[in-house]
Length: 407
Image (tube, rainbow, N blue to C red):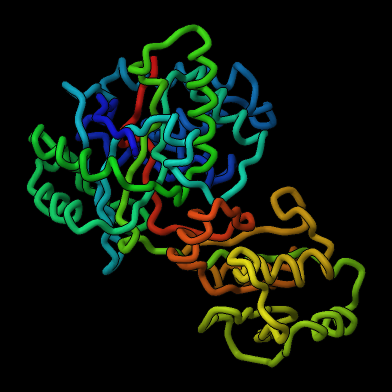
């Protein structure tokens, strides 16, 4: 049973919202964040990536950097850039990218639901990334971004959300990438109660934000050591919760820097032991269990010619690529930490892949069919863990729109 609550959001004053809202902290590099804050003193990266306000080369994981984020948050409040809502509410968050539209409920979710498996995970987290966000949340005193959750479609809940679209619009703006963001506040308490009641029996799945959720849980458990009633804000993490049918998963492709000691001929010979290989003229994967590969200006299509593995996880195309090519042939045993591999997600993955390989910085690229939402749910229901970077959800939620203060 999920525990869902309203919360009193810290949010942008209306006139600042398009300047404040930024992509999640972990989809941009420090250099990209530095570039994006140029000329925009209201960018939320001053809070989520406070290293942009310290000299280049400074260790971003020091107490001083996190304290800079806290200082910047307080300045945003003092200057009226961020304001507290007048009460605790549920919110609706609608994203529109082209013809794709999705609407979710923004609320806080109990950290105990994460601990007890009501919130289902499909990805391992990295200790260093958890510690980074744990320190950030603890020192800044706020959860500055939304965990991206979803549930299996529920007809009654869908009807409620449709009715709730009549709620007052707080924000409606188009970001630089063309995605429209609309936030509504549910002011009818009876509707909010019905939404919470409808969500309560549902399993919640993490789409994106495993490190955000895990870090919020770690902060909550640490603060509980000093005593708690269960009602303190640190007992909850802030999330947007969508119906599964409205989500859009795009390809998450890979590029690799070298052949791991092979020349092209020996690499292709090794590849041919498990795959049939044909030349093709593009990287657009058309179906599951087809992998496209780019090298030396040529695309190839790879079909796995052995019997597919029995387990749901090992049948994933990202797993077949990892277990049959990246690890045994290219020597990439741990793709989360190996510097020889990079990942490309989003709407321009194939163009970006070709650009990276043609630049000479990478030798080979792999284009994959997107993991499906049904595969993700099936694996999560069984307690399985998918390979790193198995899913790329688009469009991305924006940081800074609805902040959960825990102090």
